[in-house]
Length: 313
Ligand code: SAM
Ligand code: SF4
View: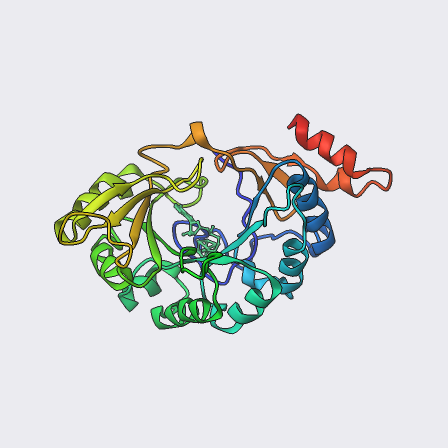
């Protein structure tokens, strides 16, 4: 089982940070144990110098981190060796996005993924378990769109995404309303299989809705055709909405499924995860991370030493 390394969040999604565990007695890391922005940027530079081209800020809830736009600005200014732009993105529960989208875009954030588990207010409030309304997340998504987050180099909206975790007993009836809502909006909806992310969320297979079942349900309402992966190591399988002739209709857009349980994508995985306290995890299910913080905080450590340590990992 994986060690939990959750950082702070204002939601208590029952599949991620259930209230029974993440309550007032839960011991979060003291601030000094967290990497500061300069440390995150220093490590990011080393990663980018050695081939990383995409950085995603996630959490916990990344928008709770004070002055996050300063970090975004620092990361956006990292130069890649071949001059190709870095793909800088962020995953958020959307609760603070309406307030922050414009500032983040101005700081250099390229795109954003917003998590939203349904359109029915009662269902969503129960899933986030802090009574947070759907409307405020939709406002955040609209603000991200208005700010131009997710626009590609040709000005097309390709990078704004919504993630929905599907749990059988809770929000399976939200699949179609969500698809209907985002179809044709330029925003890509992706359905994620409910995963066991630690010993705390009471995971059981009965609650997993396999992606194949999601696609079957969607296909009964809207004809879909499979699309090729847009990048190697892409976690989502892409499906395009078809037009009356049966071809992919870019105006209607696409949906995706992330089948982390029924079709684990380990073989193509090209990701590494840096936790808030500076540990590097190669797998979402890893039980152990590799500590980079202590190495980095030793005065004699050079960037070449960090690169060597990362290379060995
Ligand atoms: N707080 C932000 C958010 O909710 O988008 C970022 C962190 S959250 C851990 C990142 C993504 O992981 C979210 O889309 C969330 O729905 C998903 N997630 C969390 N727990 C999960 C689980 N048990 N199974 C599948 N996806 C999960
Ligand atoms: Fe918070 Fe995101 Fe986890 Fe929900 S999924 S508890 S919003 S970190």
